[in-house]
Amino acid sequence: MGPDLQAVFTRLGATVIADPRPLHQDEGAAAAMVDAAGIVDVLVIHLAVHAPGTPAEDIDDSEWRAVFAHLVDPLPRLVAAVLPQMLRRGSGCILLMGSAAALRGQKRTGSYSAARGAQLAYMQSVALELAPKGIQFNAIAQNFVANPMYFGPEVQANPRFQERLKRDVPLGRLVSAEEDALFAAYLCSDAAACFVGQVFPVSGGWAQR
Image (cartoon, rainbow, N blue to C red):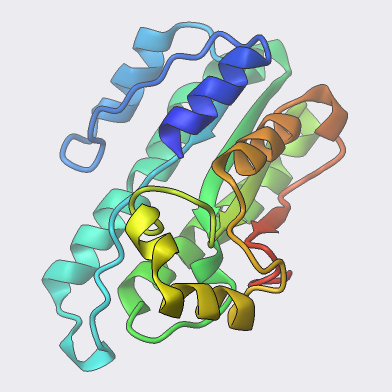
């Protein structure tokens, strides 16, 4: 979703600073990223790692720590880094690009779903602190959104996958990356200032909240 988010936000007039540096290896990377960006009106947090797909009996400490290191550990660091300037201004918006894996159980996603659930729990708690101070914090929980990591052209062309879409996704198709990014842009706009700690499933009806 990174390139599509950047393209849509830029098209809508935002000045986008896309920083793809890895955040799981260096505890100071999040603060350095925000410092390099300067004034940040909107922080879109898009942390990603490929879901391991490990059966529950085979999830070891190494996998668990690695998934949480990628998806959870950088989250409070990014928020803590950007909050001082937002609190001084009394305004700002933080949007978490999360996963619907936290909303609906799936086999062999124990470590991944747990980390995605931790993201949403953190967001919902912190959002209550920030709302009275003029700062929005919400999340998109996505799945079945067209992207090259999980749903590339070969996957989409597979008849078995097409049958799965018809069976499991009420929309009957993948959500386009453009649709997802446009909704993200809306949530970062003044028009969405009334939302506090909300989780918005973007999954074609696969997950509902």
